[in-house]
Image 1: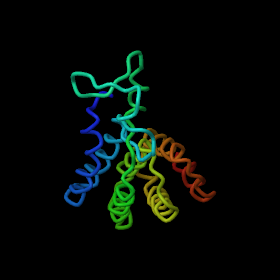
Image 2: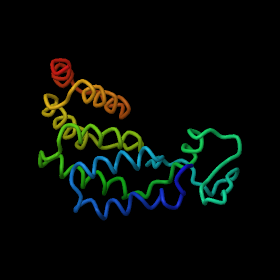
Image 3: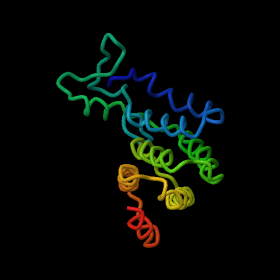
Image 4: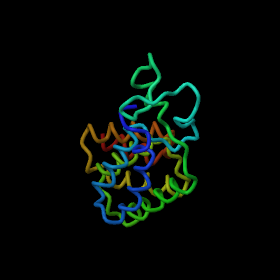
Amino acid sequence: CPVPHSLLTSAPSKFIRRLPDSTNHEAALTVWAIGRLGYTFSSSSSSSDSGLSSSSSGTTAVSGESTVQQQQRCRTKEIPTQQEQLLRLLQQRIDRGSVAAQDLTTLLYGLALMHSMPDDTWKTAALAAAERGLGQLDGQGLSNLLYAVGLLRWQPDRQWQLSFWKAL
């Protein structure tokens, strides 16, 4: 894993504490970055499992593994309330209508990378905000939004899909 395991596992809690003081753009980019670095809310194994060894740089590695395999090994155990706390704070921003469409797209992609599973209320609010912001997105933004929704395994209703295709 290119990021020391201890740093990766502590990043979400530190981010959650700083979230109230961050802008929507900073929040979206941080969620994306933490997810891109390999942090997930899955219940997969931590680096204390057998077969892992610590390198001199403090990162977790298994000889012969690709970078992708190493990132998958760095997935952390979820602290039960951490995902809920993050989603609650992010939903407050979404409910206020203050998250720009591009930032919402980045946020959804980051949550998908973290294997986040927002509940139906959160999903409904996020999809409604995304639908309202479709006109603010260019082709790349629309593609990224559709990709994030797919990674989250969400099935938007027919009206949302029609709005999306109209914006495209």
